Structures are given as structure tokens and as C-alpha cells.
Amino acid sequence: MGTDLTYADATAIAELIRTGEASSAEVVQAHLHRIESVDPHLNAVVTLADGALDAARRADEQLASGAEAGPLHGVPFTAKDSFDTAGVATQRGSPIFAGRVPDADATSVARMKRAGAILLAKTNLPEFSYWIESDNLLTGRTNNPWDLDRSPGGSSGGESAAIAAGMSPLGLGSDLSISLRGPAADTGIAALKATHGRVPMTGIWPREPRRDWHAGPMARSIRDLALAYSLLAGPDGADGFADVPREFDAGLGAAPDRPVRVGWLVDSGLGPVDAEVAATVQAAADALREAGVHVEAVHIPALERDNPLDIFTRQHAMEMKPPVREVTAGHEDQMFNYSRTLLAAPDTSVEDYVRAEEGVERLRDAFAEYFQRYDLLLLPVTTIPAHAHGLAKFTLDGRTVDAFHVSSTTVPFNLTGLPALSMRFGTTGGGLPIGVQLVAGWYAESTILHIASLLEALSPVRDQHPAL
Image (cartoon, rainbow, N blue to C red; front, side, top):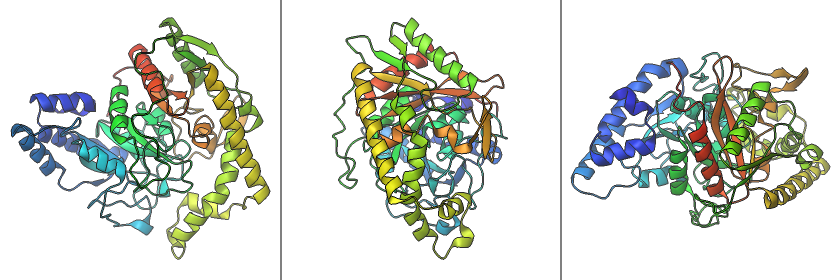
């Protein structure tokens, strides 16, 4: 039964536990065995949570005694190693924080536990969560379960690899520019970056620049994302950006009473996109159209006027330097690639910073106008499928671009705070997953989840897992 349990989704596992078809102890043990078997090849898990099996036995005892069960009672979950976990090391991908054990859980971790979930392990990330590959001096590099020579992405790459490989059914990640959606696309799972502030960042580090950081769930099914989102969203009284009641939703709901209007694009200022990625987005658009959704190709001129990657780079060269400089002071010999590169980069002038801010405002205005006419935007998650380790540059359509170009399709929605979801819908000729990205208006998560559920049912690649 172990293999079935490790590739069941969290919703199914919760039902098995509730009905007595499986015990929480069996489920946790199956995942621990899976970690022992495959993680030596992946290096996705950096710390096992002491007492997970004991917690599972207690969950079984509580159920047997007739205690009320939460929606994730006895279900294991994992968390990126930037989330504080009480009594479990949170080392943030750096020797500077080696052995650091928090006293309290991050809000999102606490909410998962309150729903009955059991923390199983912490997962790998880049130094301080700041890069597109999960590698650092403390816990090393994570490999993609579909191809060990490729990256599972960053910064939630350890989390995406663990879920894709059956070591965890459900996890928590964070996203500054690509870090939930890109790793999900690279490993063939799903992830939701809700509207900025929907999920409090309390207990997650770093928080600078706070207006662009998001936290959210990662899973193998859309229904698991929906369930986790319902548990994670809402104010906590500590994060000033988390100020909208969880119940508020500006979307169309799970059963819209009119046709959903979807626009799709693969270029429109985003730069070159891999041909197989572009074809997968078009295939998803065609599938929705055939299912009765109103779908049409769109053009968003604001993405051409104000290049989001350029805006992001100018903003963060100024905003991210102070916290990185502060935390690395006196520990310069323990800095990894990204910190060294960031601190060596030229400072952004005040004039350029103000122009970047104005660019963000224009992007927000453009998307506000777009979502008056459409309910959803469909586009690539990343501009290329999972890339080789140590990527510095790559060439598309005869054009050589910097490695960070993989995020040109995700950055706009961090800058504007729009909700976005990543899910698999295709496969490269070499067998790697290809994702598509769904974006809706602010606080319209229900629209994204509705269309994602429809696409999941239409997907040609359902229930495909890496051969490990």
C-alpha cells in the first residue's frame, strides 16, 4: 500500500484516514520510507521533523476516541526551510543560520497544524530564498526528479521536488518572482500564489521586499491547492498586508453563471519563449475553448512599454541589498553566489527607482483594465522547461538571454500582486513537464481554481510521475 499512499493526494489521504482505510501512522511511515529511498538522489529534504510518527499515532488515537477531525487530520505536509517551525531547524539555506531552531511556527505552518496536518520535513532552497535554483553552501543542490541533471527550480525547488517524487503530498512555499510557480512547472506539480497579502508572511524569512513576497501551497492536485488555500488565507493580526477577510472573494465562484472569458498569450513583451512551452499554452487554450469557455488571443501593450524584469531588477537592487548586507556582515566567507552578486552590483539611482515604481503603477493600471474585459489570463509559467544546473545564459530564437529570463512570465504578477496558479499541461520531447499559468484579478482566486480544475480534467498528462 505504500506506493499508493505516497502518490495519493492530500484530500484522498485525509478521507482514507477518516474512514479507517489507512492510519495516519501508515501514511507517515510510507512517506518516511519514500524519503529514505529517493531523497539520496534528489537532496530535497534537509531536516526531518522529530516526532512526526508519534504525532501520527496520536492522531489515530484521537480519531479512535471520537474526537473531531480537521480537514487534514493525520495528513503529513512539508515546508520550505524559510518557514519557521517550532522545535524544528529553520536554516534558510545558509551556514549563517546553521542549527537555528525557532520557538514558534510561522502563521501558515500553524494553520496547517490546526487543520490536523503533521509536519514531516523541511525542504531545500537557495541561499535566503533568492534565486531560480535551489542550491546553497549549507545543504547543497537539489536535483529534479524527472532528470537529475536538471534543476527543480527555485526558490521552492526542494518543496517541488519532494512533492513530485512522492515524498510529500502537500507543502508550503514562498514566491518573490517565480519561486512557487516556476518550481511547480519544472517538476510537474501545481502551486498557487494568491493575491498579495492573502496568506500572511508572518514567520517567513526574508520578508524584504514585503510588497512582492507571497506564501502559498504546492500540491499534486488542484483540489489540494483549493483546500490548503482555504486554510491558509486570512489576516493573522501580525502581517499588515494581510488585511482582507478570508471569506471575501471577487471571483466568479466554483460554478459561474455565465461563460468565463479567457485571454491567452505567449509573447506580448515577455521576450522569447520555448516553442514547446508556447505550444502547450495554445493546447490549453484550445482545450478550454472546446469545453465551452470563451477563449481568445490577447495583446497587453503595457508589458512591452514597461519590461517587468527590468523594473524588478531596478527595484530590488536597491531594496534587497540592505537586509542581505546586514545579515551577512561579519560572515562574508559564508556567502553564496547570489549574495555576492547582489552586493557587488551597482546601486540603483533614486531616479531609476522612481521610474521603476511608476512602471509598476502602469502595469497595475493595465491589468485593472484587462480584467474588466476578461476573467482570466493564460500564459506560460516559465519561458523554458526545467533547465540544467548552473544555468547562466540560454538562447531562444537566436537570442541569448540571462538565466533570470525564465521568470519574465511570472515577475509581472509579483510586481502587481495578482493571484496566479501554475499547473502541468504538457511534456517536452525529452519527457520533461511543461506548465501553464493562470492569472485572475485581485482577490479572484475562485476563478483561477475553477478554470484550473477544468484544465486538470482535460489534461493529457494526468497522474504522470517521475520514474524514481
